View (tube, helix red, strand yellow):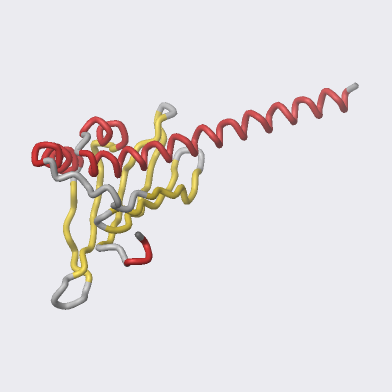
Length: 150
């Protein structure tokens, strides 16, 4: 009887852990999709839902003349929201066939990492979880994407 009870407890704990892993994976995926869709659609609400106000986003863009990747600068939370707002105002939405792929690379208890393929390049994204919500803290990107990454 004790063995059966112990087995049931272990199975129940396993299901809870698996359920939490699924919930975390869905939460990280949702944050990554809100990120790329926020920029693509000019949807500031999606960005507000996934970006921490302390966002630190830096990137490198390939110089057409030299073929070298140059530092493109930093984008803050406010600049990200403003960028999306301008996409909406100017109706400069991403093309229908623009790459939009998100990959969850790793999930820990309070931190996660993801990869986003977008029209501007590839972003490596670090997230943190507060109050059961995954939010983007840092982004490091490089663009434009290689043809095979589209």
